[in-house]
Image (tube, rainbow, N blue to C red):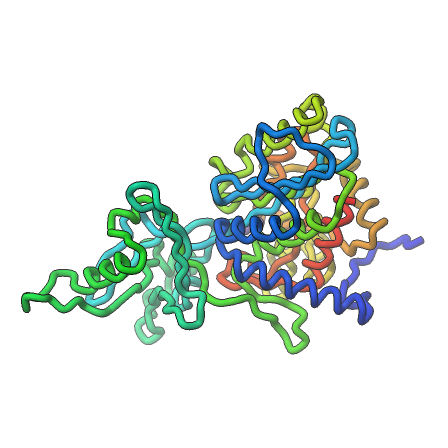
Length: 457
Ligand code: MN
Ligand code: MN
């Protein structure tokens, strides 16, 4: 019996066979991530993979039975994967795993197009918690959808193919940067200056007269030719800039992955794989949530009633009380946490933080200032989680998000727990969270995958 607790490094324990599994799993993840930069992209990818894995479209009016596999795409941005088990849901409840697939980014404003000093720009309004200075002087891609008059949806994705152009937000050169450099970091870049360059070629006027805003005119002409849109259509669109480019291995040993949007696709992918592969006797629901980065409000966020509606549909299928189903359900809120960063050690408390490559990160609670505004998994549920993880060889660790009063954060855990469902945060430790390119360990995403499989089993 180990009297003392010691955190374990996954890589240190892994033999050659295990290491191969870890690295192979990461390949599937990178592929998923490259096709899932926004919640809309992730929903489309999930739909495709769900269909390949035998899932059929879900309906609120259908009568589900054991063995049924269903997917529900809520308004293009929020995914429910439902695998109906053989256990009585009134006693066994449902096993819920929730990750979010929205990530911090730069949304376009409703009237985004303007010309200034020979360049055409799009104005942005940032989404989620970003450090604004990180979004200048990097290649950006534009993703999203525009509604044309009459209801046609026009998809847009520019900047991901290597032959595509990218977009770019300027920063001041250091030679003239003294004024900027004297400001606190949070004020160095103004939100209203996050305008992306989208063109610089003036239209040639047909009658020889010089055209006003000639670059903007030319860009609008190009957009109209390619997508059929006019300037006013931006008012009925959801377009955003995300960092361009693909997920990349990091390190000579390729132990890590740098990419945009690990938070929280690094949890969405393992929970999805677990629901595809587990063939559980339990009824399992895997959720891709939207709007987590801005408070989980609205039709596609986890504060909406949709999750309850799905559970009620399951309950109605077996003519059992939906309240009983909810109270007997269990949930993993699969979201990332901050990995210990030795470069910024003062904001962490080393004994109670998660470390990179030390396995799935369990957070009993999150919150800020004296555990405010958080779910807090009770000791009984923590004990249950420990037992299933240990019984299934899951490497896991516990941690808080930073030292006391250094800030804090939240996840969707509280919204599920508020329904009367035992919930705990289990995720992946991330370095440089919310940066355009975040860093995770292949060992940790693999550990979370094993944790999700254990939870479904
Ligand atoms: Mn997150
Ligand atoms: Mn986040």
